[in-house]
Image 1 (tube, helix red, strand yellow):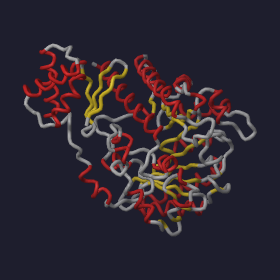
Image 2: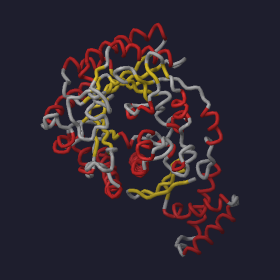
Image 3: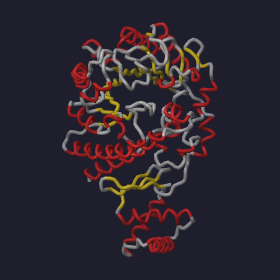
Image 4: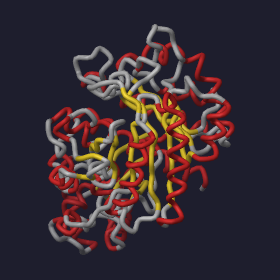
Length: 467
């Protein structure tokens, strides 16, 4: 299975099953689909392939290349196929039975330390931090039980991850600090190592908090949408006043104090700012070097929701952003954009490629009162309540349902070139838009495919520059 496309002057060919990526000339690009068809029919002989390619090109009226060009193209294609970098077989599907039956451990928790927030973001899936329920703050006792549950459920795994989330976790700051200390106390006796992260809107950020974050948090996510007018439209205080002027200096100070590493300035774009490349540029111009600006996922009835008719403009914007990021890199002002970060040399492990984030199996969310859900986006949906920190997982059927969810159980993934990059996408989005965690969110899939294409094109452009 190959996928080929043109972007920013590059002819790019992806061999989906092997992960090989090639930048080719126009002749190879045009010959490839014909060669793939013949290869599938069992043609391996160079002359037979060349004759077949010529015949197919003539039938289409596209035989504009010289005999020498076609001969060289066919030879190059067959050499790549022989090296298992083109037309490769799917090596993963035959292992899917073993994959479904694999033993899993819990390795990460999203601790909802505050179902409350000091902002009233209009697109918040957590409903201003309440998650379809009551405002609540996690107690230290519940948090301790959550960490004990994680240690007990992690098997032989050494590295464990805990994300402090909300609402706004800084509204429960003392408990965050106390839980970090408790987690550290568990490391040596249990042979574990905690990696703590935190997501914040920045309103309560101060020097004391910054110092603690820099000492204890492996990563910090800073929520800001970009330009002042964009941010303040969607991320106001409860009284309606904007948050931009308040948070930008704090975020700049924190990012600089971390040496511009181990954080993300993370935004959301909506129907109102389809020119979101301007927001990425704005954040970069503010000095942020680790960026993520992602499409809102919302009920289509909401005025800010991304609609199907918005997709063409968004795809063009991703192309525009990719070109801009290449330009900045060449000027020595490069930034990392999360959705364009892709590893072509190694990439994620097989389990990650097939099932993604591990929600419902390796990764769980914990509410302030200790209930367990597959991830933060399922919190409050009672049909996905998996157990609690006192009793552990009591609904193993839910865990097994998520454990069996992978790119081969999702019909729309089977023939998608991006399946081993997105791993089937977000289960929560699939559920919310199709009613099935094995379904898909169509708009999200379209945007993901474009992001993969742009990310690979950027790799090609930067490699071209090095050469």
